[in-house]
Every structure is written in structure tokens, then in C-alpha cells.
Amino acid sequence: MKYILPFLIFVFGLQAQAQLTPATAPAVKGKFFVSVDDEADIFVNGAQFHHSPLNESESPELELKPSDRIVVKLKNTLGKGRFMLLFMSTDRKQMISFTSGSFKILTDPTASDFTPTDFAGFKKQAKAVQGEFAEPYLLPFKSSSKWVWGEVDVSSIGCVVTPQMFKANTRK
Image (cartoon, rainbow, N blue to C red; front, top):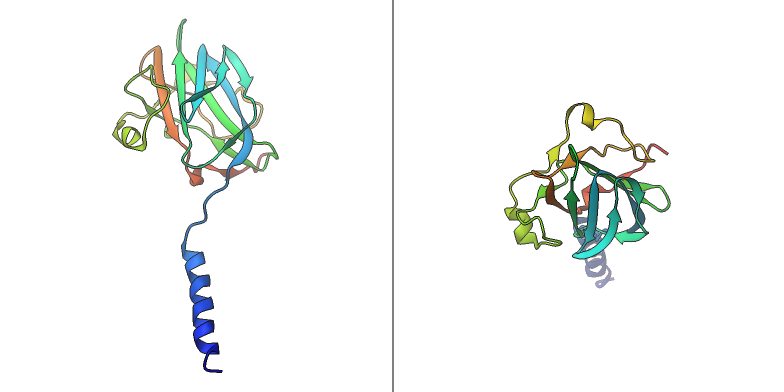
């Protein structure tokens, strides 16, 4: 009997600690869906993952997780530039919509990766594409993704994936 109370306190303490400690978000399998005018190369954690030519494309499947770093090298050759990105899980239950608030403009347009310290130092958000050129929405799944671009015709934008970016797909 004298051991029951300390044991219960220990068990309840472990349970309380488990509730307070954030769970590590698991990787989510899925694909990027891309629309670009004119060209985009997508790098994940420093490795080139997908080349998107003019118009729409979908990437090979990958596992995306919080803390992954995405760099998009953008190239515009004619007129204006615009880029839209969506990540959709294979089971269609989760998605990430990317907006201008998701990306920062990298100071080096040739960079394919960055450190967390570098990312904190990038001050400029990607530019939201406005006006007629911001229409139409061309991706195969409805989302909150928006058209974005860097500052100049050839630029790079970067993003760090966070657990909060993964949202339930309510638009099936």
C-alpha cells in the first residue's frame, strides 16, 4: 500500500509530461503540384528534386516533414513571372498551400539550400502576384495557394516547412 501512492504519482507525472511535450510530426508522403511561368527548379534540403517547365507539372512522390527546407529557383524569360505550389498527401487527407507569406527571397539567386540562421536573416517575403496575371487558378486541387515570385526575373525563394503548414484537405 505504501508503494501505490508513489507509483501513481510517477505514472501521472509521466502522463502529464507526455501531454506537454510536443509530438514530433511525422513525414507525410505526397507530391508537389506546380504551375509556373516560365520555369522553376525545386530543391528539398539542398538536393534538386523537380524541374518544372512552363505551365503545370507534378513532382515525383516524396516524404515531406517539418524542418525540411524548400528552395525554388525561378526563371522568367518573357513578360511577367508567376509561380504557384501545392503539396498534397498521397492519401489526399493533408495538404500545404503556399503563399507569399510561406516564402522568403534568398539573397543569393544561385543558392539551392540555406541554414536556419540564414533563413532568419532573409528579410524580404516573396512577392504576391497581383492583378490580371494572378488569375486563373491552374492547379488540379483547390487550395489557398497563391501566385508568387521573387524580386527579379531570375531569383530564388525559400521556405522552412512547419507542422502548422500541414492542413486537412477539406476540399476533396
